[in-house]
Length: 604
Image 1 (cartoon, rainbow, N blue to C red):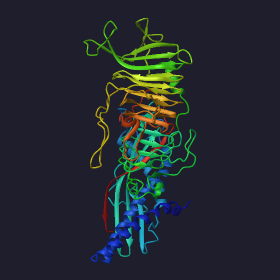
Image 2: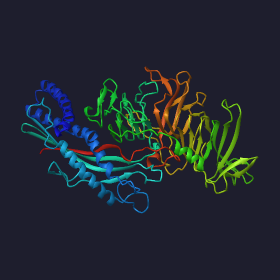
Image 3: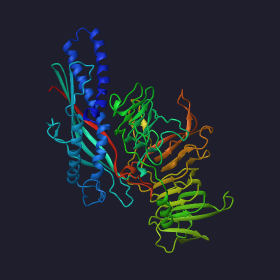
Image 4: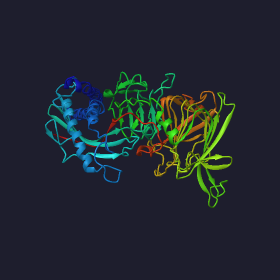
């Protein structure tokens, strides 16, 4: 495709912006005689320049995003803890100088590709006679052979993300500063709009635990559509391999990314189109979104992307096996070859005689207790109960004939946190709390997990829930305890994670939930009475978007099942994940989004 072919589809979008403004101006000109022809031309020129800014945002979200992926992939350092830059000696960040040096090469290569797309192109709509519109985007000091209109660009930098570890679970975020310059001219009238910001992109192989919500198919398993509404308040990363659907004013405090697949599968994406569905409008391609891909609005529907949006994100394949988890359980965790009828997690304190006591008792020693009831036949009519515990050192013990003994061949056996059942876990529940403050556990039910009771942390990292204020703004949950260590993952590689219809009202789940081939849903959600909310502190990753309850479409009131209240555990964005939780296969740009910090208008 030639240069004009790349730019033209996006450039056509300017027409809609300008024509809408012209219609308003024409009406005002008829109603208000004081508007002179010159006044109208000035405003028309400014509207044309603003249309050029929308075009710049569209390019950054589509064509330039695709070029960034191609440029970055071969430049990522796959042997260092950091995709770009060198370690600062503490293991917590790369040095700013080394990051800037590595990313300057990315900026230079990207600048060449951007120049090929936008330079020497007149993007003005043909419907506006005598109009001219040019655009250049600076990732370096020079773009389209012209100097930067500002004193200088900011320095490329590392934003956040953990170093790569042996399980390659770190996603790192970097920033390329940019300046977009739009020059508009209609006859003798000229206007320039200069906007500056950051082009933030994430790279690496990431744990699925980093997502507040991840869907492979953004429908339920029956193909029914899932819409984000004004009730939707997600304050962490949200991704789908397909397309989102928006109605009214859903709010997203974290990065929003979609791969744009029309029919995602376990093997790949197939045909892709960057875009989304908007209530009352239908499907809109990203390059045609108005007023811009970063801030689309159609009537009453205006989703809020506080941390940016990427409509052309990388397709992320769901894990193809549970081999890593089963091996980890067999080698350093707890492995059960049959179904579990009941699995209970509970913090428990013991005295010097190894008797359970209140944790407030002087000298009480805290342990994490795991009680597993193992099915001995298919119907689970015969069972065996096994009880384990470990303390802050991780030393695992098993209860035999009323005496706690070291598990394994020696007292040095350290529990790695993985509990694996080859079949189903028919009931998973917790005490108060379920996880001690030092516990890090991943529960795996290969054929499915059924949650029947509360699962809570002793030391939760967040309190409260995102709340929409009367003025329309959103106050996120309070996450001021990000040094907390306790974390739980619940993983169903081949089945569903089902919330029991007999679970308590206002069920609390502190965990990252993942159903790689199924969905996370409530049993008989349409037939049980209103049971309040499932309050999840963590994230949800699922193949299909399972249903929790039903609502009256006219009043918005809950009719059956549970509502969904999700608080994103912000430790996950910093790289914390449950032990041996599944990771993505991606080692490239995962997502990219534009954050604009300032804009100024001037004559030129």
